Length: 228
Image 1: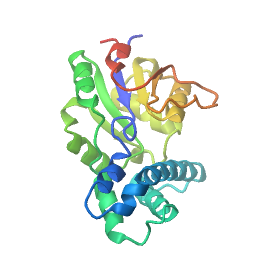
Image 2: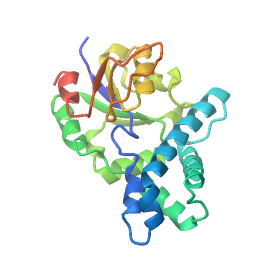
Image 3: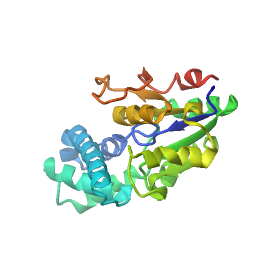
């Protein structure tokens, strides 16, 4: 079957998760952050993901905003930047308005012009996702924004991928699923989606039972891979 629908992970895929720390570091009076923001951003993202996985396997679900706050608190302490309540609040405010990668608006427009459905499937809480989509100005290029809060468990639980078929009535092989997280693209391939791993960092493929169908360095080629 051909693709009827292109589904995207949000954080790290459409939205640059390093943008909050990078933007804050460029503001006046943030010399300490300017020296440490790359390490902070990396630790923040790593703990955000680790906490989502641990909560999924233990059944201790909370929404992704709480996981994002907890990951930031760990990263701030690890980089010696804890204790600055104003910095913490600023980073969280910027996270709600993350920059989209530059190729995102045009890529989504090409998919829509080609007649494909488009959606986000994300760990993000609905409020987080709504704020990011509005900030990036891409709401008119998406048919749905699906959050794991509908099923109360984080990726890569199969119940999350089930949300796509439930919403659109698609078979898995009619879906092109795109993620910048190698583990997410691999798990989605195991589910039955046609998958693209957006490997911006040039990382090795994860050693998992499944592999992403295609690997690309960014999102530019997604319309062609989707068949439009």
